[in-house]
Image 1 (cartoon, rainbow, N blue to C red):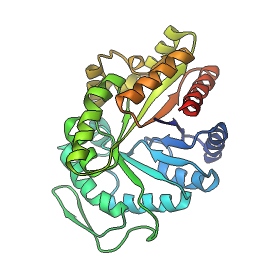
Image 2 (image 1 turned 180 degrees about the vertical axis):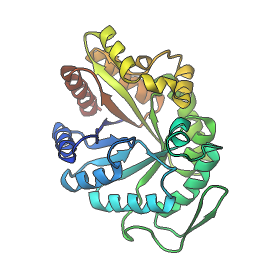
Image 3 (image 1 turned 60 degrees about the horizontal axis):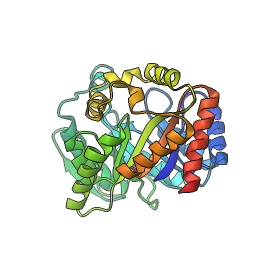
Image 4 (image 1 turned 90 degrees about the horizontal axis):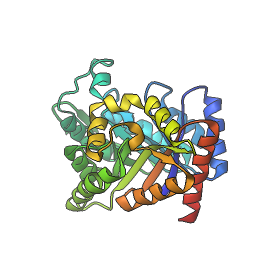
Length: 303
């Protein structure tokens, strides 16, 4: 299991760049950034990747509704060329409360929409021509979009339900997860994803898992802080369903919280569950975040 770390892109660009440089100096070679309401993540990664070399960057995730697949493919291929490394383009459906409530876009039949979108996006990322005319997505391209000579970014989708996991396994390189626990990955995510990939004749799919991580002696206090910081996710239907499947009542139940040895053991269990890359989201006080970073690097260096 590869070790990565979350890169916060909120705030001034120079601060984000300094943060990325420090993480690279620590020894991280893979960083993942979300796209929520802050700066455009792909633009930020393109600029950072020009200065922080020998790092693979990923998005976890870019919502698809506001971006036509031709535009997103051109942007991702441009970032791939700019960073001179490997971009993993993680995309997702966001949530109904955002898509309909904030953007005024239909959230109807989300899995069907994702299937049509990926039918266009995947070949466009490879620089291929495409002609897709679906119910919600139409895209036509007779020549490569974006830079013509760059290699295709890796494509993953945020997939939790059976239909989405089938799309991820049969049409993309895998899935990128958040707030999804080890037992659910082992019994639900990984088997369905691998079955879909095998049926489609695709390579072993990637399972990128991101979770809060706190290395601390104050477990009860850390759990309370994690629950407060991530309370929103327990209210969103897709994450709530995964927490229920896990038997988790609150976000801290799926987070990695405990001593250094306990966290290292939980990382081992995630690897056994089928996680191919773990992206830690250090949380808590500065000392706890530093201890989490040290634990992640210790795991990376021992495997």
